[in-house]
Length: 221
Image 1 (tube, helix red, strand yellow):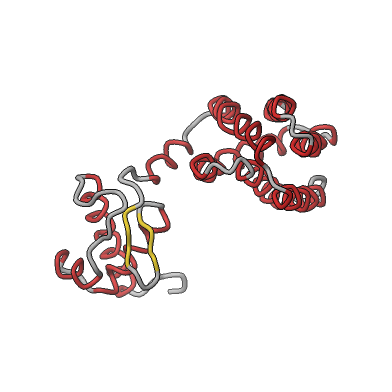
Image 2 (cartoon, helix red, strand yellow):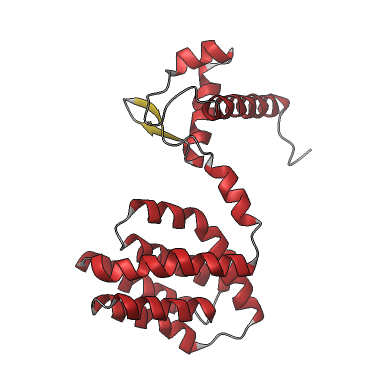
């Protein structure tokens, strides 16, 4: 019997999923505008014919997927009418070549902006992230991939463009999968890892063209 969930938990999970589906449908149909405060939990519970606890859990799912923002003490607000989950699912199906093309467009250009806009705090955080990556490059693949994704997210964040940061945050799962594939099929090369440090040097030199060129070399490596 181990590993089986009680029937009550399965029913509860099903109710939450149904509530999430209903709320997603209403959002897609334009029931609320972007930035609008959503009805309260009691109001939604009455409207959907479910318990407040089920509404609360459904809202957490929507918040996790990026559709809704929950503000403590203030309520829940609609962040976007475009379900990020669909975008994430589409990205998960893209080929390695498509992933590489997207990185050239998104990541390399963002790093070029970072070379112009990064702050001393950005550079310090990047140095720390790069050091952590270096400690795992010749060791555990999973640990290195996690550190490397963190470093690349910080690079994009240094462009100080929230839209680019959010896009890359969703896309980073594709980057991680491609990196995992490369590191398990191609021998690790120190010169490839060293490109990360050279990109960081280019940021410190405020040289966007060099930063982009190095970024593209890294993507192609």
